Length: 143
Image (cartoon, rainbow, N blue to C red; front, top):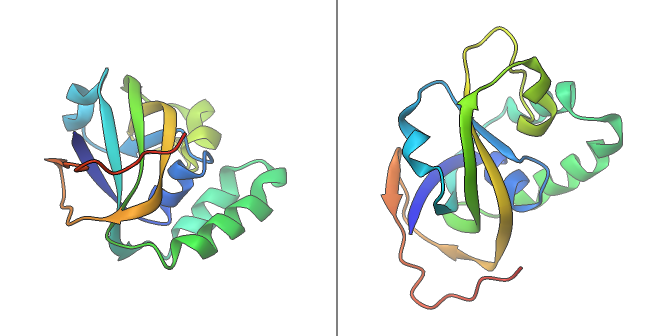
């Protein structure tokens, strides 16, 4: 299965259904449309993520974001979910809440994710930048 690595807490936010558009400033992930991919939580932590997400998320999501972020702190270097990439396109400001980042002013591309299935428990894996292959080796994927 093709996989991509995200810094935490972004990966956990996808697994928890809070982030349904993954953003990049390049178009290299266009080839993932139509594929089920693994979302890998990298070992790195993005200190700016919670501030960026709270700026664009609906007020009612703040408690969920904080709770998901707390859980993300202990999940690093693991595949946290799989998802199907249904579309890829240039993003605009209206996509910001679904991407949990401001899409205005920075040229961003988005992977539109659907049918997100958390991997419970998360599976340790060594990821890296770009697209890589993950072999779940019979790991149970929970809907």
